[in-house]
Length: 218
Image 1 (spheres, helix red, strand yellow):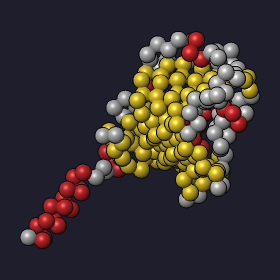
Image 2 (tube, helix red, strand yellow; image 1 turned 90 degrees about the horizontal axis):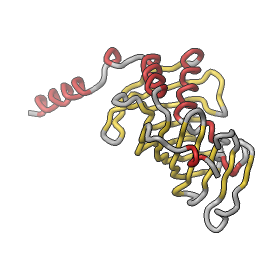
Image 3 (cartoon, helix red, strand yellow; image 1 turned 135 degrees about the vertical axis):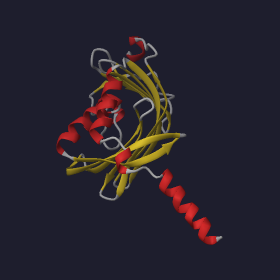
Image 4 (tube, one colour; image 1 turned 135 degrees about the horizontal axis):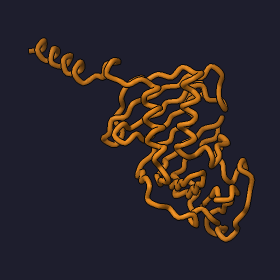
């Protein structure tokens, strides 16, 4: 009986495990991502984000709004609730803290700590278009591979791993999890050596809802 159970277990693993030849290449995945994104005029999503720099940690939940060509609105729902930052239609960066300072709206530089993460990521680095361009650049010069499949919120995602020859902003390795059912990025993880310093999980993604320009004004 034990031998039968062991044989069934091994067979189950062989059937369910993805084989390398069954997976698309990294370039195919990135191309499909890019093609799907090219049809996107705007989107909203939730981003459950965790950042680490040295001994500092930052844990926040954002609601992200994006509209072409490059308008971004980030509302912090948890971690610094009430803070809002926008990249406006005229290219300015404006923001305010939560209560009781929400009335104090400031125009700041793109790299101002008010509107960046502790790792210095800006509003221009917060949207899917930036991430896809980074992947397109990496596929031409870095080691990029598809390492397997992972289920996120009930959906299978392809896992793309990029290992950088030279660290980028301290990052030596990225993992990007792509849902092929709609060609969307569902999660990213970034590492300094063996230490995970960035983890962002995306959910409630809504594409092409017709966001008005006034949403990106402040």
